[in-house]
Image 1 (cartoon, rainbow, N blue to C red):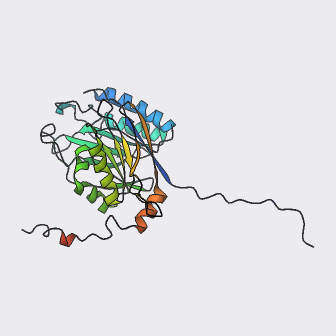
Image 2: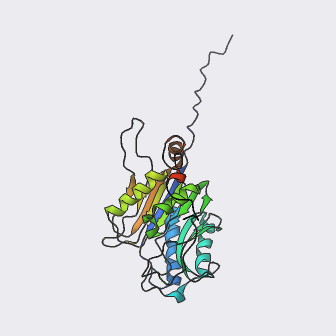
Image 3: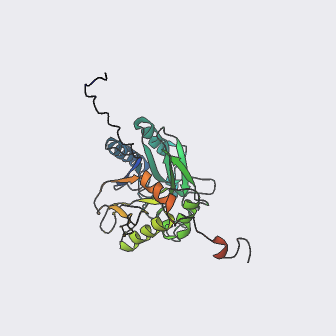
Length: 284
């Protein structure tokens, strides 16, 4: 005879979703003082990590606060105390960091973003390709848009004005980017937010924008390409947006939902016809 004693019900927990937690450090940087910017930045990373960030992202050219005119003598070497200080705090806390700086290079100073992994390793360096004709005229331009893996997420960078070039986001998407980080030093308005919505939608990528605070500035924001619900009703591409105050801005990207969207929807690279868009490169 079978045992009539009721057996406890065993519930299988639902699979854990992959949520990529990016925190935008919408704070003022010390002007033209890399040592103080490092000290403040490490404190910001520590606080954001304690609040659960996977990756902490800073606004454009944190090492100088994007103070104009740019003082090229303040350019930092990649293998120097400024970047290494952020590598140390990343390794100590097991958190990623996107730090921005005026960096040295063989071609001259660059407006750069450095993605640092959880062990303090440098994962990616992006030198701004689209330089401003006035403020950045003396800098050396980058030549590529690369992506790298962070926690299994393919990440790329567009720095400030580069968000206004459709080719920048498209190159990153074609290279495999799933999330694009966008450090800024700019006034912000609805037109720029709509640009970001378009970049997310047309490339099926998520974007995380981080800006300096201030009147007419701030508004660090996150964008998703998932713009229709299962019944085809439109959704907002804007996931979250801060106001103009100095603050930490947490963004949460559901990578499972993003990847499902990319696997079945029609935008991005799936139906591109580059042979019909322009003459072949290198030919007149």
